[in-house]
Length: 129
Image (cartoon, rainbow, N blue to C red; front, side, top):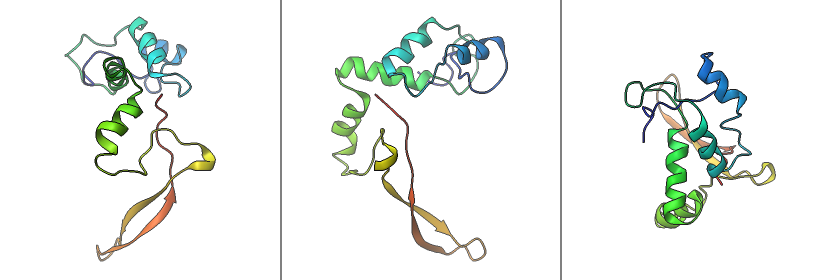
């Protein structure tokens, strides 16, 4: 499933279908992958599948498919199969304001192109449940 599934996002654009997505609050971070995928299944497609590329909930639905097949949350699956084997211990999908992980961000000198020491920043990723 790709961004050519016919699904869309409701947070940009003003077509009637995009407005329906926004009204249904598809993509609300309080939704689980299960509830979001169920709502997406009930929503109208914006395009005939395979005809148009558009950012969409397709990848969220694919994440839900992984959850159903694996019998665990997408994050648990990713952690066990990808993150832990690669020793990516600071990678998270869910983070709270008081527990945001510090991440290194490479910076370059805009004049000389030299890479300067990485800066420490606070960042919060997507909420996956």
